[in-house]
Length: 573
Ligand code: FAD
Image (cartoon, rainbow, N blue to C red):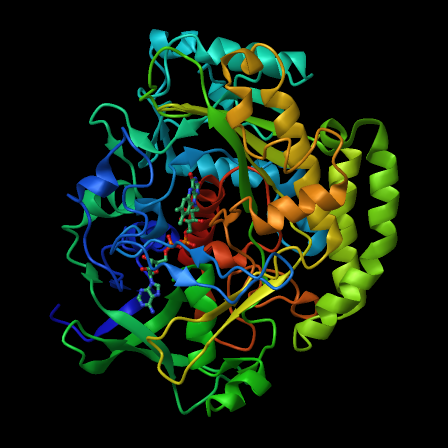
């Protein structure tokens, strides 16, 4: 690095950050620096592998943040995985590539965002290079609709060639049909209800994981106007003495700590863009004096912009599983790749209206609780509107309420499952005066009983699934957890919930978002429609933290589109 000043400084070389690095440096007259706390991971076999999942999780490539005890959810402290290295969480994730439901994105304009599904799909396709499946994968159900994919973008997507073979897909297919879930041959067109095969972020030719660095950085790394500092931690934004004429604060530099521990400033000639992910971007803002004044005062940080929404609105999903031993004659080494999305009506059947009415009646109370906890980020009326919008969408449409993943792996089989739309809202905040320390994370999982009810309904449904023929025919029933001793066939909601909280071993889904929400400021927003942090002249956040509400699908497919959209806006500004 032979410069100490750049037009754009991107803090965090992860999934979204590298999209920006590529697009902003496409103009040779613009200089771009990426600051990444982790290392290059191009040749890390735990990252590149496509024949196994989760190899890089819980290694040096994973921040492995520890949360506060989840006091409403069995008091467990949970490990929040997040990728550390050039490529961010795309280095360690499950590679699933499924977009949200179109109905969820089409809600955004009513919340004040200027992006709808059609525009997101266009931006997403710009990012994607879909590699159509071979005939043998098509036999397993891996079909696609051209209209749902991009074919000329930098990000390789495909169907995994390592998906479980044999007759498993037929067993799953017939079982889902038997419980009323139709087959789906495309999950990326905005309509998700159904059962089918998932696409993945992989280069099918080279047979390696397609992380953000492989897609967006390595192909352009020789650009002289693009620099990357790895093993370098961004700590805070340095502000100009002079505010802009409209009173907004002006970023002049980023403070960084080099691999040898030296602190220095790099000048930002135009902008600083935070792409450190939903756990770190809000915390960098706090160290820079943007956040809840009460929290900043505790750590003696001078307030530049009072913005209590920073770090609030943390939302993730809880993953559970019902599994046991299978009775098939061999161990399965292929990877799971089958998935289903079910609606509120699938989960609650004839009880759906009762569930909706009972939940709707509680929203005002939930909203008051959220408003009392969020440091004045938004009031109860705003929160009630957001919660009602979320509930209504589930009730009045086929928008997925839970994702169900049937699995046969080695000698285990069963189903993993997670409700997609939590109503509880947590937070992430700084935890020390030392900006390199891990933040305080509290998802407040199961704070509201609707989240417990959705988890119980998903668990009941998943048990029913694996006890339905032909799935049940391959299961060793006496080994399935939860056992009928623990959770009897006619168990009450309370018994199910107790199992979920105390012994299911539930975990976060690592789709954490919402902590720098793109919303009007009075609705709890941190960034405006241009990704600009309120009260600043030249600071943006572009990563999953800007997504205001949880969505179905998996986050990278959404984020690559959102980051492309952000890059277009920044280039035009
Ligand atoms: P990240 O990609 O996490 O990027 C943030 C970057 O900032 C990181 O590289 C980090 O090291 C860096 N950083 C943080 N703090 C600093 C600092 N102070 N200074 C410098 N750099 C810093 N999504 C899917 O679509 N499909 C899946 O199958 C899937 N499975 C997942 C499995 C796991 C284990 C995990 C962790 C996530 C999974 N996700 C999945 C979620 C998805 O990968 C993330 O939501 C997405 O990648 C987040 O992108 P981001 O740009 O917001 O943040």
